Length: 333
Ligand SMILES: Cc1cc2nc3c(=O)[nH]c(=O)nc-3n(C[C@H](O)[C@H](O)[C@H](O)COP(=O)(O)OP(=O)(O)OC[C@H]3O[C@@H](n4cnc5c(N)ncnc54)[C@H](O)[C@@H]3O)c2cc1C
Image (tube, protein in one colour):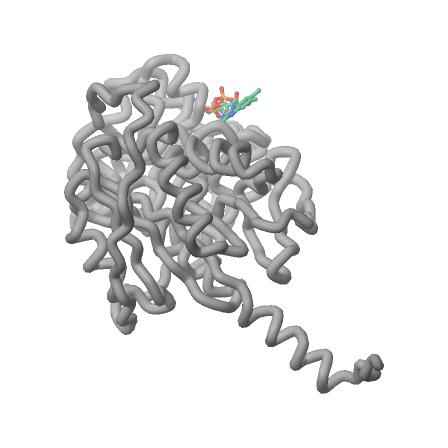
């Protein structure tokens, strides 16, 4: 016999539905510190309702597991340590995630939409034979997600009917989970035998004392208008006065002015700082896709018709070689 569904028991059914979710967040870290995007991913996972577990896989990462166990919203930390997890190779991490999935039967598996998550989760989804959903910006319900398409010009709402939902999370669309207030239990997970089809040799990261581009509160970005790599010094000087990160357009990267880890945009990094200053950047749609969610946008461009002015809150039509040093000097006072 069926019970008629009224508003009250519809709410009860929906809260039960939420309670039965269990989500695995694959933590991104460097064995010493958690990457900030994992905190945003935990917030997204918490929106699904139910239990949130985090998998920390690395070579010597107990410190990261301890850090995670204090994060609000995390109920369980699963810790797996083995030399094979050096460099977070997807070939080695995937069997571990699959074994964890077999043991705990998560309803959702997610990671941040960074190079780490983009590299790993499609492989996990393929092995589980489910379709992944990439770079989600909103969660409507445990099976319905919003993501951008056409370089951020349209939003697509996707209902996922897979038994296990595998997705990556756009960090800038979710607040970071508080790093205090949690008291998760930690459980050791047996590492899987190494697969050995790929080997991590080394990585050379650009060293910088400036804040990291995707988590900085202020970003100063330069484009082709800078005309050379040497001229980026003008932006570094300005950035130093504001504790800002420095980004770039793809044209500046392609011209060899700066390394490609500084690229902001559709095929670069997505940023949403409090303040974004675009210097000598025209505002092509592919660049806007990476920065238009910034709280306040300032543009400096000598062309009053440059499309960047259409998204800018404040625009300065000026020669950057005059305006930027003046701004730097004014900030020094
Ligand atoms: C598939 C695809 C993906 C892409 N992904 C990205 C991406 O991720 N990120 C990205 O940025 N682009 C991306 N692009 C490239 C994008 O289309 C543009 O070509 C690029 O953003 C242009 O960079 P820019 O604004 O620096 O250069 P330009 O378009 O050449 O603009 C330079 C600007 O500098 C101004 N300027 C020149 N001199 C001065 C001066 N002295 N003072 C003040 N202003 C000055 C000019 O008025 C001009 O507006 C992508 C393109 C494609 C096809």
